[in-house]
Length: 144
Image (cartoon, rainbow, N blue to C red; front, top):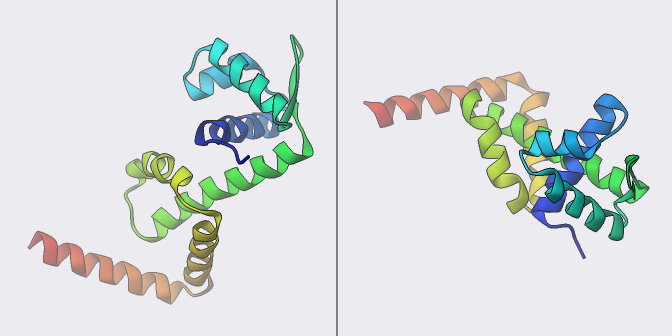
């Protein structure tokens, strides 16, 4: 069974906390996701049961190899979507909310194709300038 969007959010956050601090605690996750510690405990127990992490009461938890791989993919997906939205000219203050809104609704195939598109623009900055010119032209038409 594949993880739910909520499970993905937890795994991504746990992965980032472990990368950043070397560990992840219930209180850190609750604060990061703005949820109650009891909700975190329930989800962590579910992730433990599904073998994404190993939960040791009062000692915190570690990601299993399966959890690490998924965590890496989820962080990659989030960062790629942020980069993609920047490439297409989405304003910076909207990017985080937009990524949170779309990341769970795209297949991994769609994510890979977005990766190809971002790479296409990265490989030749003239392409990025052309896209930016087109965007500005369309904004002028729509606002004029």
